[in-house]
Length: 195
Image (cartoon, rainbow, N blue to C red):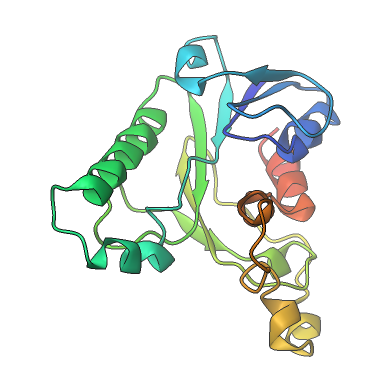
């Protein structure tokens, strides 16, 4: 199967599919962290390359629930709203592309986004990671992802800062990259269940 992992610089999802024998490619404006089949370019230029499956991680900084405060002091139709509109257009372009099986992954969106409703919400603790980070999946032509290793009980025994490690990351140049990285257990579940 020919798999496109759009907006992925880490290579985590790409490599999970490669390990299962698929022709998997990541595509991002950034170089890949793990050497492999990576297209460093605008993914919109590569959507018609005969993919069987696309898993995409479109930028979410302005679309996620936690960013509503970013829009609060800006009038509708001005700079921040225009950037949000551009993000929604990008998201919708990925959603409506002619690829038979699609998964878009993002945090819970706020009410001002203009996208279709998500299919399900998953948590890292459902896939073997003792952390929480609600993640929405928009699914087309794919079944809902099933949990593989529920460690919620163990996670709840940990201090809040460990349970929500991503939320409590200190400011740094790499913070956004760490917050957007796919958990290995979730990447493995994508590859195992959607192969």
